[in-house]
Image (cartoon, rainbow, N blue to C red; front, side, top):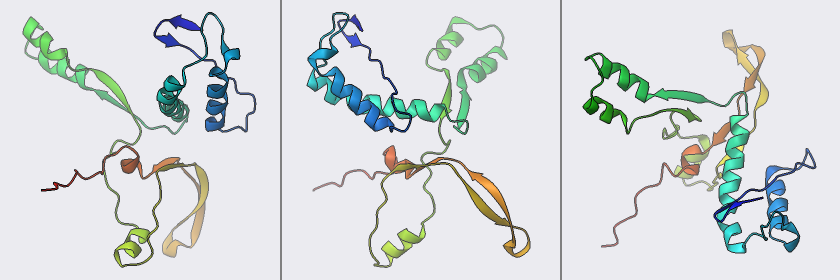
Length: 185
């Protein structure tokens, strides 16, 4: 449906529960670029716009899927509430104190709280550093699963435990561990 001259909405239909998200998005993008997709006065989507919106829609869809997981990590950051409480300790909120609140807001951080933390070197990293074969792993989601977890004296007993879904190589996925460009001079 055409909302105005700058926006257009799309309906995503899940026709096969086993179809992965990437396939659903590609199928709909392919449909909305055809002349048959014209409805409510909106013509087909321009291929240049498709190239621009494809990664954004894919990222948003992944975020929505993550948010619907029961195990999704949510950390409330109540910066505005805390600052307002501290300012009220000094009496009435004056115009100057209210102005300090304008750039501060409460929000919820989605995902692990320490995205920038770098994990300890793994066995694969140690092999690479020792001159062994190089194997790189791209950032990806590891699904949640059950696992036998050894415990007790000598780790002789086991229990079944749930391993939460996790983003492998999260820092690389969000560009947090990239080194600054080298100076050519």
